[in-house]
Length: 113
Ligand code: HEC
Image 1 (cartoon, rainbow, N blue to C red):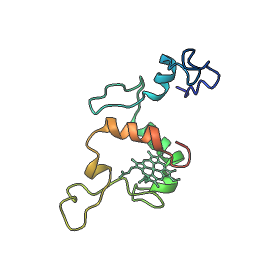
Image 2 (image 1 turned 135 degrees about the horizontal axis):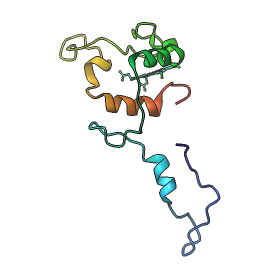
Image 3 (image 1 turned 180 degrees about the vertical axis):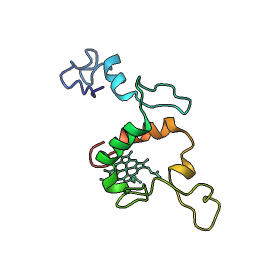
Image 4 (image 1 turned 135 degrees about the vertical axis):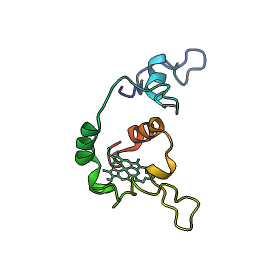
């Protein structure tokens, strides 16, 4: 869904400033996905399909094997958080695929979210 900036909406008639907030405007911003999957958009995917997306849009910064590069490592670190050498990665501190999806949709690729 594209973001509606509603730049040409009329100002609030009573105050003469601002603009009414429309459902369409709110819908463009209301895209957060809860851990239980609430608000996920319709869709589907496969590991193979995801691999192609990763190679095209993510590998340059996160490495061919998710080991990191300009961006942080995305794999590894399971069980490492309470150790002297914690590795914060998808496997160690992202407990839900749903919130991971939400983060990636909002922020990645880093240069073009
Ligand atoms: C131009 C470089 C770049 C590209 C391309 C890129 N990322 Fe990132 N990614 C980053 C950087 C930098 C961070 C750290 C951001 C921060 O800490 O604010 C990050 C963070 C992340 C994280 C969070 C990791 C963590 O441990 O919290 C995930 C997940 C992620 N990226 C997934 C992806 C996916 C999936 C793609 C492809 C669709 C992608 N990234 C493409 C640079 C990139």
